[in-house]
Length: 105
Image 1: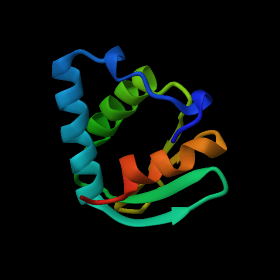
Image 2: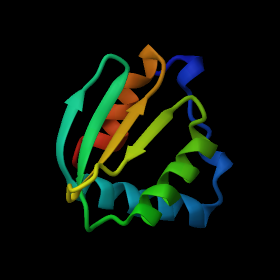
Image 3: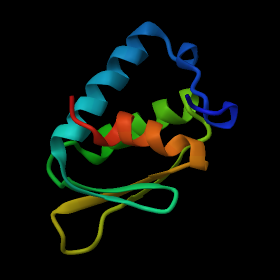
């Protein structure tokens, strides 16, 4: 069970936004080439061609509305064809982060 400080509010998104979020999460998972557990979350390396930066930005914007306890760092290292995404939150959020952003179903 996720503690109150790490509880999502799915109703913060309209039904069409929830569908968009699910599609973007699937794209993120399919495009992740590596993941590493960090002290407070996970660091992902994403294939640089898909999803696009705009799609990742859309996903982060949606997640910030329904899961405001999460933090995101999005980086595009120079001369690399991968995108780095770090997702973090309070300790109770780590299992949620793994299930939502890392585990492939």
